[in-house]
Length: 348
Image (cartoon, rainbow, N blue to C red; front, top):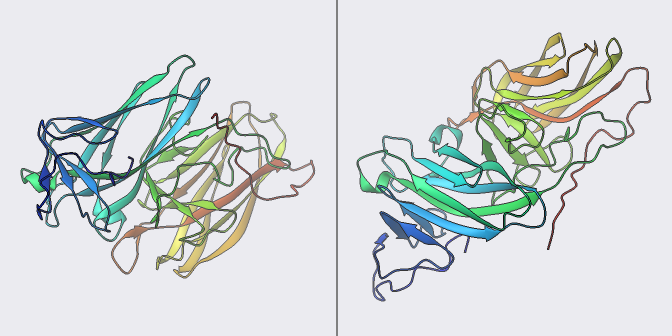
């Protein structure tokens, strides 16, 4: 029951209330709950949702698949009311970690943020895993607490090296699921590549994981849009041969989301840093860029960082799209393909 389409039991049969406060007589199929929890029969967008009030908490357990696996959780988050002054915050707890998600309307037009994601890993032998979603202190108005819907949980396995690219997940094909009618999945700051929802990349600031179905994506099925402005971006690292020359190729563009701006993206490859500019008319376009650098003894950093803040016509924060990042030795063969592919390991 990830989208709460199966309603709680024992609701008043003739009720037309937009929000139903749950009590000891109600049960939510697939879930347990504590504290102040309200059921919203018709949330914005036509779906059903749960409004978590003061001390409100919903829980579900699931059986882990096989050996140690990474799990990616994606959810939709909103506020229960239209005129709420505070940001809704939600704590999501898993056996080995927890994350705090906050709703901020500046990242999306409308009432929903259609995607928040977290990564968690459970070791072999852990069979029952609880997930807990709990509201944190916010607006005193009871309808301004976080509204939760459309939860997706998937497993991901290790990535394989692709021919001609020394970077794993350089095409960003391995990441969170996209919700129906996706407006992208927001990825909050995460300095650890082990905990990042974007496999093998750390996140600075806030970026949006976008899909080719709803946005312009330069290559493949997914890309990254840097949306939170100055100092936001992504970064990874690779151990290379000291003193050897390498080439880094990548694509920059706009997501076809009315983001008209003169983008400036700082690209770092080891000790070499270079700025790249791209004029965007917001209708979906991209260009390829490249740079050459010499590797050092330490693991070599590869990063992309936005140097400007941009907004769409609707006042929603937006920014440059990064995709198809390819790294290879300059004295070696050039890559045959300029994108990487994901390999998920599912156990049934």
